[in-house]
Amino acid sequence: MFYWFMKNLVVGPILKTAFRPWVTGHDNIPRTGGVIMASNHLSFIDSVFLPLVIDRRISFLAKSDYYTAKGIKGWFIRNFLTAAGMLPIDRSGGKASEASLQTGLGVLARGEMLGIYPEGTRSPDGRLYRGRTGVARMILEGHVPVVPVAMIDTEKVMPIGRRLPKVRRIGIVIGEPLDFSRFEGMEGDRFILRSITDEIMYQLDRLSGQEYVDVYATSVKEKQGSASR
Image 1: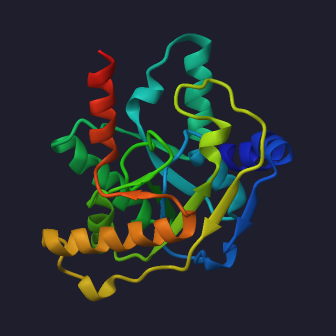
Image 2: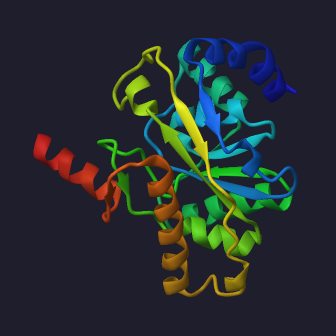
């Protein structure tokens, strides 16, 4: 109820009026059943605008760090993320990664929509980076289709490091569902997982028009951090 209230009566109308998001391919979204929406990741606001332009509720796996701020600011952030359908997860790896997988599979098992960023983090420079295979494993274990989604110009509205967004129009391109059921039962094969992930990234590259870089975005960020020290 809180999600519906914020989306349709409070946050949604304000953001739609200010940013006038355009959308293509809305009919490609399955109307029922579990489905993964796999998107490129240019800005924090990607997880805000995608839920606004689709009819079904969508949940995203969000870093638990976002929920640790204190005071009034922390209260506002936590409630805003909850309203946007965020699910806090620990991304420290190991058992935490397995817990994240199970959280996502739980969403899919309920016949709901799950939003995933295969790159694993926001692009540091607007380019599209290599996808991580966790999305492929979730597709196979969840027995669901995946819909590629390209966010357009969101990094120009709120680039990394900026606290308040610039008001300008953004776009969302929704591709046709991808069916990988032919690989069912092969979620333990790392070559299959890589093949599925690469196919998803190819579709995101085609939809977004971004330059593709076959390295992980986290590696680029680590190098940038080392260079700045």
